[in-house]
Amino acid sequence: MPEEPKFEKLVLRDDEGVVTHELSLCNELPEGEVTLYEGGRLQGRLAFHKGRQHGESVFYDPAGRVTLRARYAEGKLNGDSLHFDSDGKLIRRVGYQNGRLHGPTIDYFPSGKPRETAAYKDDLLDGELVKFHEDGKVAARQHYRQGLPVREDAAKGTHPGGPKPGGPKRETF
Image (cartoon, rainbow, N blue to C red; front, side):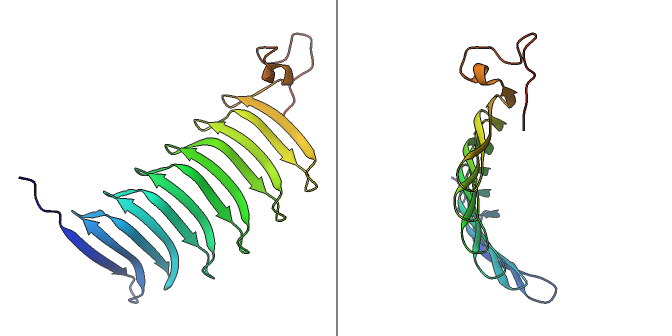
């Protein structure tokens, strides 16, 4: 017969008695929300299940504004991580799957317009990386396959990659 789960609520304090962590344990593993404090102020809220990060984690700046929202599944980043500036504007969106960069990543200008877009697959650039001017015009563009830059004609499938013999050299930015 399995043992009954043992639940415990913990409040951890620094040497001055200021709270640094609040958490619940189930069988000595974090379960539910773990709240982090720095100097008595809220620094983050992390979701745990069976001792592993699972669900949304949120971090805050000293003024209490959200700086990061990230989702975890079984201890690994999974889904979009959203980074915010001190005004609460989205400055970066990063896609993850099973703890690895996967999907679109977008960096934003303070205006909210894209600064750079990229596509990742299994932690490697895979697809188009585009850098923009603030007015929205393309500043630079490069295609990648499995983390390596490819020629424009290779990106279109007409050349297997790399410069053609005697042709122009590959340029990257």
